Image (cartoon, rainbow, N blue to C red; front, top):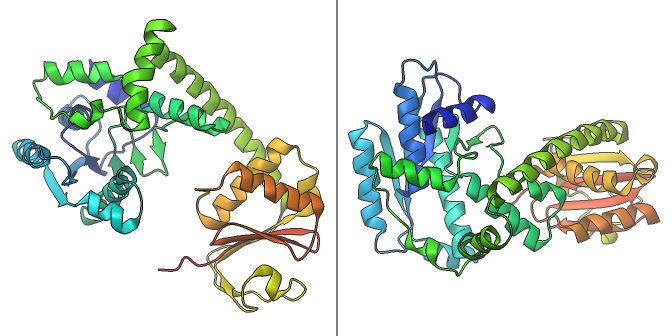
Length: 360
């Protein structure tokens, strides 16, 4: 039974604990309806020692004319199953224009912000997303096409930040569709998924079927196997990097606003006033860093930026290579800004990573 496979995934990754509140992102499509219905069944099964409170968060993007019908469908399903349902109407096209980002990115940003909002309102602790195995494979193929690092081969992770959980991540799309038919859920189908405009749709509707027909009918399972092997190896490498980082670390000042005085590093070279404040600072030993292998150097830089800033989004290979060159040349009064809130410079045989306050 599909319920048993999903439960196995939940237990395997310790996704849910008894007593927790779980917010489920539900669009009304096959994936999210399959996820919601199975979580309901798991929660009701007296043989399963796992009790949790379910809430639904639904976003109406106000793009397609069918959106209102999907919202009504989700609301009625939740009412029938006595589940709290939170709905948000948001004009994503207008939001994307205002934010100056793509429609897909704007929709994703709005969805996840709303999920967190519902989580706070309901005092929940997890957000369940309906990504499945096919989504994971599509993501990996997208990453490969764009020129990914090994970490990009991991694809979508079962748990992210101990907040987002994906109980369907080991379930194929065909299983989900069969389940929806069997349970007569009658999910709503987003017709834009069949339009080959976006890269993901092209991979889903064109590339994967072509590979299945011409090369490997088990491409989904094959790439999933690659992903799991990569994850194991990356986890091992991360442990090594953590140990090396501890050896390189000279100072770690986190979550404090401290006056930074430039002294020998001139105000002009750093591009900020002499007493500009910063939130977080990490200092590494330059000589020890330069003695590391290039692979370790790259990992250390990413790891340090994540620690000092909270994430390494938009930090690309070119940024990392420039930081390595800066360290190898050991030139004072030079700095790099991978983005506007991070500065990295060399001084007194030390590498300084500084994260400036994020302006509202």
